[in-house]
Image 1: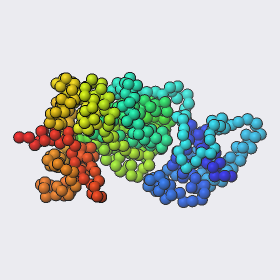
Image 2: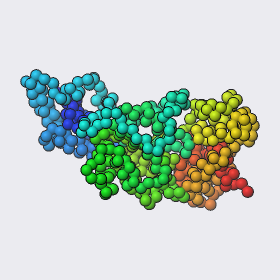
Image 3: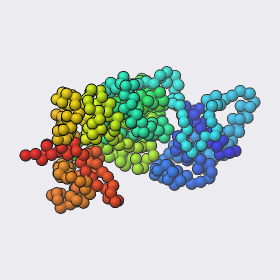
Image 4: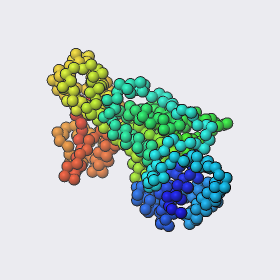
Length: 476
């Protein structure tokens, strides 16, 4: 029996039993095993994950196939069992002269598909079809009301098309379980994630948005999320049970959950990504989302990169991070909505304020109120000018810095050109280790820009942040 035929049959049997297709990683393991190869090293290399992770996934696969096929399956006997089962299945189908349920469910599959790649799939059916929502269940909670503006903002989102396409591919094709959407405050993470929901919502059973701006405990967040799904007879009280129950929902349903303002789980005045004592359980929860097999995706929006993401995205294929940058020339729509004049100067204004939507909105309001909406007149002033609202917004970010970070960032504010980390050695009363860690932390907070020059990484502070630091920390 041909390899493709055996693989296809295995996928059909799993889908008929569970309502879910084999995952890309499971298919890769099965393919190598059916060819009599040692799969761990090859699959780990191809999918950029650890061999240990592949072995765990293989163990889960053998258990799944054992349940589906009704006998003990291992890497040694899997091909013989699949071929024997398919032979008897075909014989039974022929004698009864009717299509099996598997054939009905899988009749439209393109048999020429490359088995090494993720198949394009519609939202998979859960184990309990009677509980599947007839329409996607969308619960955006306290999300900003952006949906009604999407049609008018279509041109603005055109500039985000590459980002949206990348995220959509990670979620719908690569089945990434955990994604960190990162960037400095105001850059548009919330808007982009809601735009993404608007674009791919029909591919999910449940779509949920929640903000963590008030630093809720994990238990409170789990309780809130569990209320959205079909309720069991008893509401679990134990946090371990709540996690287990949510993971079951993520297996049985195709879910997209966006948790915004994740940085509010972290301590101020401490290195980035250090959880508040009452929020430490989130670290284990995010790790479980990455490691446990399910068919859903959790997206974390944060202006500080969670530490576990740094570790997990190196070891586990279904974990990724994406840093969001300038809105670019599409930010003109913001200035247009504020009815500003002198459109020929708008590109200059956008460059000065780094294409940051929030910074531009606050500045545009200032221009309209004090400069009659004339951007040209505003640009005659010494740039950049920081609106009070913008200063307040930046103050919240800088209050989170550690003393070494503040020491380094104030030195950056006095520099006219980008510099290497070593520049600060012997110039700041800190050890080289403290300086290196401070620069790294500032990068994790997206407060420093980096560029490569002759194989050396140089760092700098953008004009808006430089102006804020000079006025807040260096002025007499």
